[in-house]
Amino acid sequence: MVSRLDAPTQELAEGLIRTAIEVEKKGISGKIYLDARGKKGKDAYSRFDEDIRRTAQILKQSRMPVILDNRPKLFGPGDAPSAALYCGWYSLGKYKDAFQWSEGAVGYHVASSEAVSLHDPKPEYWVKSMIERGVIGTIGPVSEPYLHAFPPPSLFFPLLMSGKYALAEVFTMTNPLLSWRMILIGDPLYNPFKNNPAYIIKNLPRPPE
Image (cartoon, rainbow, N blue to C red; front, top):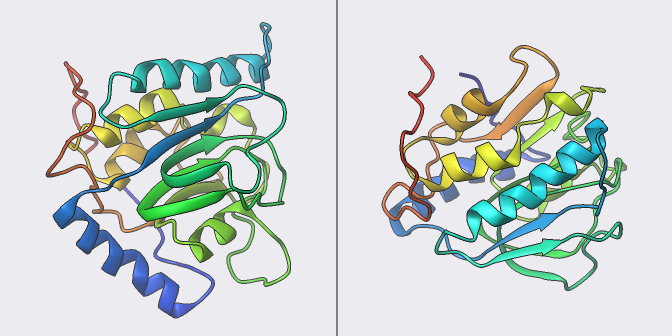
């Protein structure tokens, strides 16, 4: 199981660990934001869009508020206060500053180049921009991964919210293509729901070895 402790600055990289330790003690609070596109059909894009909507239905059983946007338009400025968890699409290489991130936030944006660079100051890649604004656990591709390489949110978030697994374990269990182009940024041991699970699921899979 592999993650990267990296960020646009050394201070932010060290903060991934410091914040993870503090949030684990008290737990994470806030809302879950899911940004689908309203697509319907049998193609791969529609199936992934449906999985985002399915995630919203699953997580309504949790103790955290769930906000689903099912429009082609993305969340806009001021639309997403207290964002603790996030998954959505699609804005290629251009972060949308719609979120007020909760301390210890985890999330990922589904697009093809969001982890190309964490250090180039000019691009607005989602991974870099989310870390700069306070997210401490995120996923992104270093080049075109194709849609089927992204962890399905309907698996990723329930496992994380169960408190049974650390961030790197959840990523490994839900990553369809290991050793491909998807990377995890964050403290691999981070478990924001360890002491206060937000979602109870039965028959959890065994953690990866």
